[in-house]
Image (cartoon, rainbow, N blue to C red; front, side):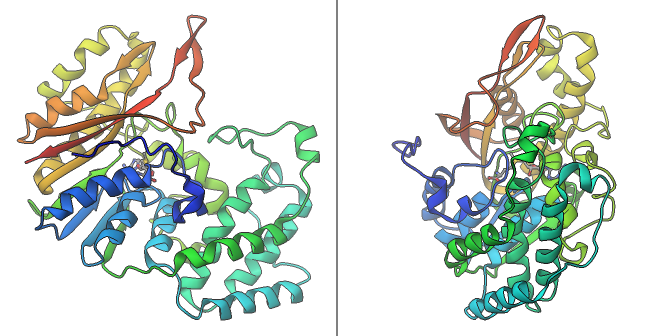
Length: 402
Ligand SMILES: C[S@@+](CC[C@H](N)C(=O)[O-])C[C@H]1O[C@@H](n2cnc3c(N)ncnc32)[C@H](O)[C@@H]1O
């Protein structure tokens, strides 16, 4: 039992998780407190996060016990890169590579030509030129760990200097005035960010495996009871209408050298493909079991029919993954969940999940509620029937035992 999970004074900027931006991240000390408690009871050798995002839970677990095998999956290559860099860190001689990069940046007067679809929509000409110089220099760094770390730092710089608004995770073009006001400090900002962040990356973990793929397919590859703890925060709905992790990631992914990304091949085809292939996306199937349907029918009855499809698609994938999580988890499942609203109807994801897990031999040990801090989604979001809709404001962290 943990006394207080609010961690009101926690500042992400103070640790490794504040060195890169990713949507809807878990609060690190909450995950650490829960994991420490479970791990202290003994017998934990493997910890699994099927939707690892920026790798918060996996990293915190590695900090508690370096010998635990960390296994994670995410469909988004940016999440894969962020988590890999946090876990593998940098080598002791990193400063040599940093010196080389600084030298290259003084020598390269013009970056190699590099283009992608709509590059001029999303970046001003002078910003493109600076990013080309950085890209050309980073590609020349031989050591993988250092090069990947430089890409990692570049991601937030790309977003900051792009023409998309910082107020939303969606790609949404700024006004002409706002674009004209962007002052180019790309290279000095990048160097300052590297200088500030790299000391946090000397902590390196070796015992980890990351899968860059769709967890719905990947789950079938795992044996029964092969993970002692599954800890995760899954998406709460389809990315398109909840959090567009893919859109958020695209500009950075398009600048990074393909060779340094884990790609299945389809990820960069267009700006929305990662979201449409994610859980509940428009490419998901719609096959709910009778039991699954009985859990969401009370909500469907209150939601207009045109929105049924997206709810059913999400729960088809969600239940599919949950069922597999129950099969592969040996001891504990820890879930961070929020409720979401469709058509002004609050879908109690926490309750639905509890029923589903209990039906699959897991019982609830503990549940904590906490406010969602620093939300980028406003408290009230879009309007339905001319009335603003409340977005999620608190989340629940639940611990289940087999
Ligand atoms: C709530 S976020 C996880 C955030 C993470 N806990 C953190 O602290 O950064 C959910 C993640 O699920 C991933 N995701 C969505 N659909 C997926 C799928 N079908 N397979 C694997 N990952 C998926 C998204 O890319 C996103 O990174």
